Length: 54
Image (cartoon, rainbow, N blue to C red):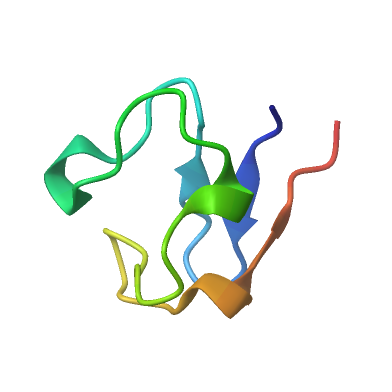
């Protein structure tokens, strides 16, 4: 599972951590996050994220 980065604020979504405050359980791949989820830092929509460069 890879990290995804918000292109607006730089927040990294880590599937191993999830987004507990946003209702996303740890172990949830980015692709399985609901489409209405938003960045917990800046409120960007899911389409503003891109895979992190390794």
